[in-house]
Structures are given as structure tokens and as C-alpha cells.
Length: 160
Image (cartoon, rainbow, N blue to C red; front, side):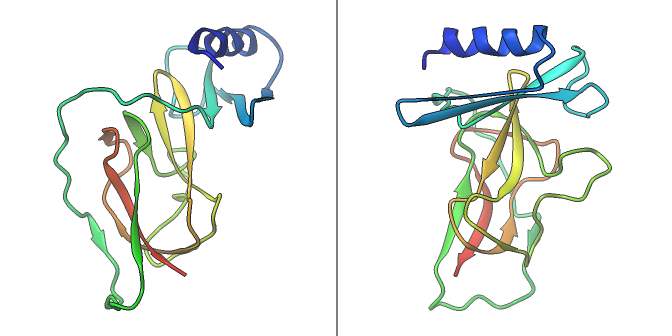
């Protein structure tokens, strides 16, 4: 689906009483949902839009230096495989669905493939980032509200 088609669908959802729209074409699914204005994600419009599974092209930008913010207490075993979950787009990362809510995931938490682990806001669209692996969160590289760059490491997972 082309970008102008997606923008047209987002506009339709924003201007209507529809709360959610999901379309599947050519093996891709696009889901657009409204987020209430009392959410911390959107301040300028009555409803922010939420898109899921929309591939974002890489954008050129200056790299952001990150340092590990938290490390698991458990010693790492060399026989266990660890992988990094990286940002699929440029935007602002939110670790929880609302300012007063618990984070989607935290260190030492077991996660499943397809589980939402954070949200990246890009151009007023909320993109749920899902885990591609089963495992345990070993390290968190980015904190809530921090800007992220394309392909920047977000989490380190110990695969199970």
C-alpha cells in the first residue's frame, strides 16, 4: 500500500466515528486506531492515530548516543543466545501505553513472540513494536520519551 493511500485511510479514521480500521492486502495488514486525547501521546489533535505494521523507510539523521540504562542482575551464560531488538523507524519511544501505566516490559521479564514491548511515535502515528523472539529481557537501552533513530538498539533479549 502506498503512503498516500495510508494517509487517506488515517484521515478517514480521524474524521469519522470509526475507532479502528484494519485492512489486509498482498500479505500485509495495516491497523489504524484512535487514541483518546487524554493519552500522553498526542496534544494537538482530538485523537492521535495509531498505526501498526507499517514499514517505515530509513531516514537519514544524526546518530543518537545511547548508553545502557539498566542491566540484568543475572550473570550472562555464554551458551545462551542474546539478540537486540532495534528501532524499525525514527521517532519517540514510549515504554508504557500511558504516563501512569506500567511499562510493557521490564528487565528479567519473560516475553513471547508478537508481544508489544513499546510504542514508537512517528509523525503523530503510534506504532506498536512487537518482539520477534521468545525470551527474557536482559537489557534496556532506551528510556521512556527518548528519541530513537532507525536501527538503534532498544532491548537485549536472551532467547529461550
